Length: 81
Image (tube, rainbow, N blue to C red):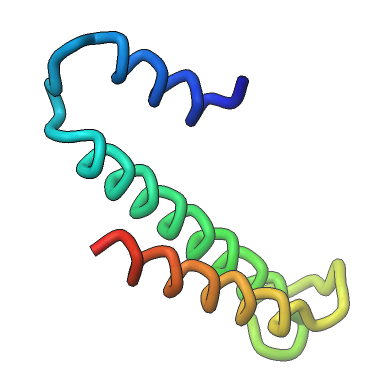
């Protein structure tokens, strides 16, 4: 079971909603996921030898992947609100 599934299971077994409804929990988890994807995109961009601020290039330009991570984060964030 994933950490997400564990949390959802524990939340469901509590019989109460200490953090709001299950929909609130799903929304919060989606927001956390979107934030994590955005941070990953920022990390990739900063390592880019062409567009980032890295003094050392340890990979080819990853900006295409960073853009995809941001697109996915935007989709998730849009569904979370």
